[in-house]
Image (spheres, rainbow, N blue to C red):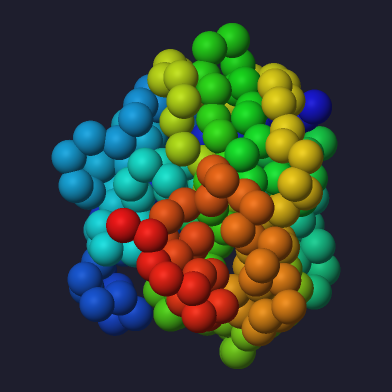
Length: 219
């Protein structure tokens, strides 16, 4: 399928754009292999050494690893007229040769020889992201472009490193992509029923779709 161009890890830094007062969105490429595990105690990501500062909205089983395509960063570079280095969107994995925003929810990737990831959620832009980039109307702009990357849960732990191959292991037939989930949850309400077809969609985003459709929340 493609490759991991860089593995990016973030340190906690002060921000005025988060209720927690700190953010780990500033992720930088590392040159060593990084351990990937199923999330443990609150505040610990699936990526060893990566800071999760507001566990209400970040991290957890269904947002353990965030991936974004280098090709999509390149498109944003052209549109914004500025350099966007790997990790600048807060992604753990910057990939090449993959349609990351077109990843189907429930799709499984093998990264390297061992790690298996399952697509589980989309990126919903927030004020921390907007404040970090400093772009006018960024939340609306990012949502409208519908190039959200994708979040994964960890199925098989291991280590990942720059240069690792990414192999498609399986893909559900429902066709609900990360981009579609973003579009459905940010204005295209006609797509909301489709989200219910994606069994692997994170509970928070699935329940958001159900509430907007007036359906009972599952216990």
